[in-house]
Length: 418
Image 1 (cartoon, rainbow, N blue to C red):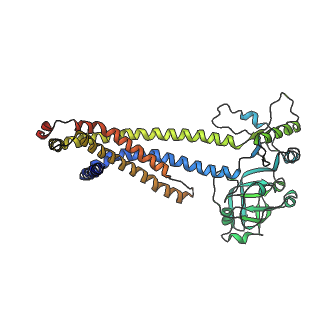
Image 2 (image 1 turned 180 degrees about the vertical axis):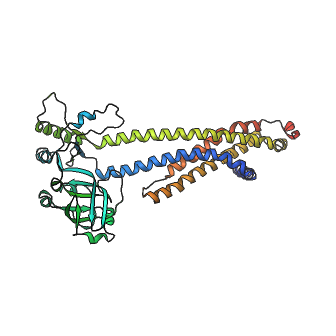
Image 3 (image 1 turned 180 degrees about the horizontal axis):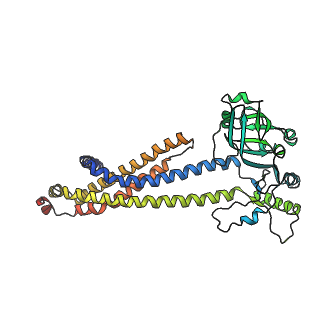
């Protein structure tokens, strides 16, 4: 056992010595491997990071709810009948109240409408392109929110259409750097003065998270004072959460029964509403992740193929340069397997160094992007292991033929080589 360990250590030492003696040639050879591993690990890292951020946002939404909307969620559907969905009625607050009363499986119900391209103003500070979300008081019960100061509006304030507003941390900071001083102050929204009732803690801007640093919340009935709620361009959503112990399918059945009756749909008529659920999103995103991963893997393989030829080439050159040394080793009792292992180790080491270089580049880019764009990226140990393992396998495959050729050299002819 110790003999084998000594042999491998010695072979690694000799391989490193050989690679360092031809630095430029070694660098150019491992560059192809580095680019290939970079492509594969970078794509895997990007997909994993997007997936984690999406999953974090989706987990905050929960799994036991139904979203009632005009538009059904769909991924990659080339036959999406948008013209049919466009003419569907917009879900209304009256429908939400009816469902809350009639659907026994429902624990919470809320109606949410988002309108974009709004502006907020406080003295000389102006924040443009703001998306305003209007909801009922149940929004606070259905979503986790932490307040830096103030509170959420109650059902009385919301139903009366009180001009009050909740600000995300980043929006508040753009209006006044002294964020907490905004509490209780009036700002201008849509030419209306509204009172700041609460300011949310800084939580970041996770994907699909219902509450983030750019959140702006107002009451649903207040929105009705300056926006027509039956506008077909609105994507109003009724969100219903199932009671504990009630499945989403049971909730869907009850909603369908009540809503079809309310909208007076005949038995043979299809639903003029969509019931979207978390499984649709997760299945769609999982399919997308697989396609992107596959694309990145094949792009990386093309680069790795070029790198493999480069390693095979440098190994053949190395065999030719050391032919006499090989002959001497075999003449003094060196085995073919020893020669084979020596060159295989050199090829694998060269390839792994290239892979490590590719992973190092990904690591640096992950840190830069995370800091510059405030979007968390995650280079996992699993992806690092994939990169190093693939590079080792490529080195093994690319180096086998040169190593086998070296192990089969005739010692007498090898020694006579000039």
